[in-house]
Image (tube, rainbow, N blue to C red; front, side, top):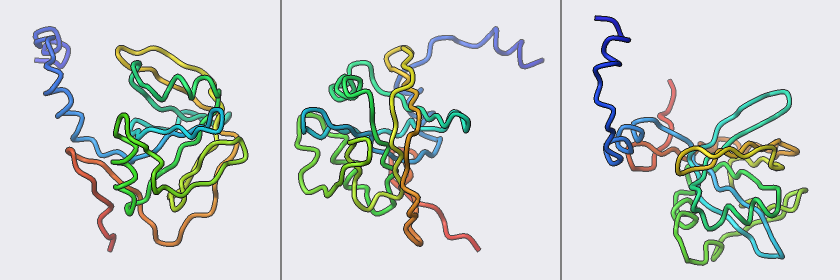
Length: 173
């Protein structure tokens, strides 16, 4: 039996909870997408971040279409991607909450484009919105990188998310 034969016989009804569990088996890094509008810092936790193009330098992230934060990012037309270190799971949790003061106790500075960059992040990218595409219950946002932090902190490791839990990289031999 070929793969195409099994495709035609597959059940096309996908249970959302099972789909989410299956996707949880893909390890991803954790970022905080941020901007500032009228002196108000905005941000949310995002694990659906990836590179798109080297020339021009483009990145992408996905966000729920019903997001409270994203319309403000769209209004600003710019954002920063804060790539979290393995020591920042509390930051990820704080920015994942709705209705709370996400910035309480968070030290940050403004990037050259005017976006909040979170202190002690592994790295950050300063972006302008390049394109936006609807995709089901999410939006795919493409950002053009206009600046970035090249000061990599010594031995810092990325914050990873796998099977519903935070983790890090195993020590290499």
